[in-house]
Every structure is written in C-alpha cells, then in structure tokens.
Image (tube, rainbow, N blue to C red; front, side):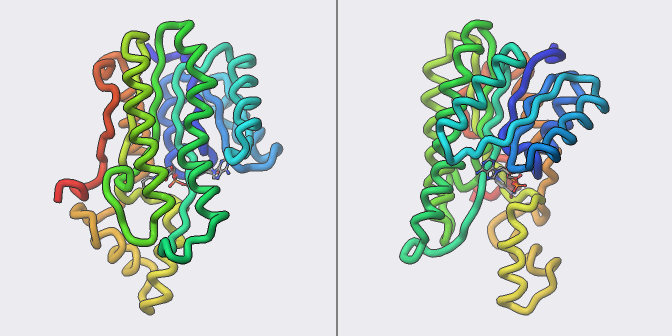
Amino acid sequence: MLKGKVALITGSTSGIGLATAHVLAEQGIDLILHGLLDEAAGEKLAQDFAAQYEIKVLFDNADLRDPSAIHTFIEKSVAVMGSVDILINNAGIQHTECAATFPLNKWNDIIAINLSASFHTIQKSLPSMQKNGWGRIINIASVHGLVGSVNKSAYCSAKHGIVGLTKVVALECAEQGITCNAICPGWVDTPLIKQQITDISEKNDLSFEQAQYNLVTAKQPLPEMMKPEQIGEFILFLCSDQARAITGSALPMDGAWTAQ
Ligand code: NAD
C-alpha cells in the first residue's frame, strides 16, 4: 500500500532518522534524506539507498535553523519527487545545563531545530498532502514532551511545544485524510545521547557502560536503551491505513517512564 509514496525524513543521516529510512525503504517508499552531511557524502548515501532498495532518493542538507533554507528544501522536494506524502520531523539536538546559566545561542538553536523547523516543514508540505487527500505527519518528540528533567529547559520546552503543534495540526487536518502524531521515546541508542553518558562517566569515574546503565535506569523502568529501528517500525505502522484513526496523539515509547 505504501510503495511509491514519498517520505521526507529530517535528520536522516544518523540515529533514529537513518534507521527509519531503512525501514521505509524496505517497503518501496521513495525517500528524501536530509541532514548535516556535505553534498558528496549526502549524494553517496542517496545513491546507496537507491541501489539497495530500487527506490527514488533525493538528499538535501538544509540547515534547519534557517526558515528560508527549509522553504527552499521543501519546495525542491515537492518539485523533484512530485509530493511529500509522509513527513517525519525527526532532526534534533541537545544541550544540558541548568536554566540559570543556559546559553542563549543554545536555547535559540534548540527551539529552531527541535520545534520551529517542524512548523515550517508542515506548512510547506501540507498543500501536496491536501491535493492528494492523504498524508502522514509524524513528529519525533520525546518523553521530555510529556515530563520535565533538570538541565533540559530548552529541550523540554521544544518537545512540549511539538506535542501542542501535533494536536493542532491533527485537528485542522482531521477531515482531509491526513494524520499527525508525535512519538515520545525514552532512551534510544544513538549519537545524540553519547555526550550525556560521557559526562556521567567522567564526573563519577565510571566505565562508559556503567554510566550508560545509570543514566537509563535513573528514570526508565525498562533497563535498556531502545534500538532506533524500533522507532522506525512504529512509524511504519502509523503510516498504514490501519492507523488512520490515530491522530493528534502523543504516543509514549518509553519503557514505562511516564507510567510512574
Ligand atoms: P542523532 O544525533 O543521531 O541525529 C540527529 C540528526 O539531526 C542528524 O541527521 C543531524 O544531521 C540532524 N541535524 C542536527 N542539527 C541539524 C541542523 N541544524 N539542520 C539540519 N539537520 C540537523 O539524534 P537521534 O537520537 O537520532 O535523534 C532524533 C530525534 O529523536 C531528535 O528529535 C531527538 O530529540 C529525538 N529523541 C531521541 C532520543 C534518544 O534517546 N536518542 C530520545 C527521545 C527523542
């Protein structure tokens, strides 16, 4: 059913986005890959996907801090691929520091990349979904879109914001064949969290593995990190026809973190 649809995944050069790209490509879904790779590396990634899965693939490295770059990126994507049927707002960054000293430039970057960029991609992608009467928008929020944690003021603000954006877009598109949902993962094994583990390891003189275990189990009852592919498989389900009534939801995938 999804073969030939076009999925745009922001931040798909690494972690959850890259794993999701493989899951969707296996279904014959054409891809717009995106992330902070140089042109040559990005083109190579796109060619490798196209050859491995026999799908159409486009790559773009628009900096999501720049709204005009995002507009150009989405316009080019629609022009080249014909439409954006599935939009996965996944790119994100992190900086941990208490609010009292949180650097303004880090605040601005996190709000721009983790929240505002999704508003821009949604606004620019909606016309092609509305034209086709079908669309799936999946925003990768976080457990931090539902609860707070110390030292994550910007990240929690952005992720709570994306949960709100998700609800409004779902309401506005409910009669248009377009669903919009947020996934709220707990710990996922990707480069994004390596710095937090390294900091704990150095501060407490622990091995990387012990620091990782301590970080994960501090708040998440399931004592292991999720694999990025698990998020990709959940996204694939949300794209299916069976999931058409799931919209406007913030869906935890958090090892019972928010059950407490
Ligand atoms: P990652 O660091 O592996 O990948 C981040 C991606 O975002 C990369 O492709 C990178 O190029 C892109 N990116 C970063 N800054 C950008 C910019 N300025 N412009 C364009 N692209 C940019 O991270 P990940 O862990 O795979 O995270 C993906 C999403 O999942 C993020 O939104 C993150 O907040 C969320 N998330 C991650 C976890 C986790 O434990 N890893 C948990 C919950 C939510």
